Image (cartoon, rainbow, N blue to C red; front, side, top):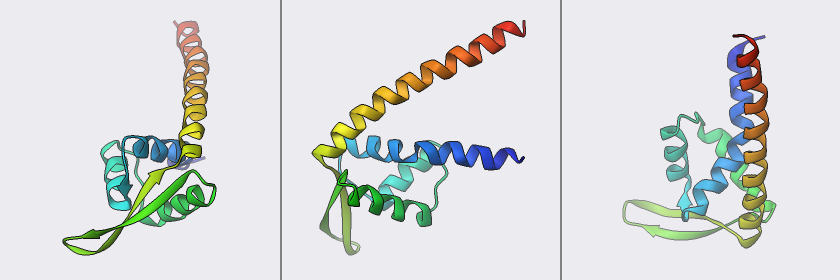
Length: 114
């Protein structure tokens, strides 16, 4: 089993949560979302993010608006909907529970190895 595959799957599993969290801070277009993810070392390619944004939009968690750009074509800004905000609140709780559970296991493991 290759470690890179496992690491990619772990990142993929939290990508929706990260995107919703980015948009909670304000509307953003795809390039801004990608930049934020890359700065956080969540390596994502454009081919991955576009279908994900569409899926989140189709699920009613995101909306979008077009805005004219001074340097090129209009930009599609994604917006967190009210349903998206409620969904994100639930994901926050789940994420915190998951962190606590994993820490209990990994801390117990490292303590038992001493």
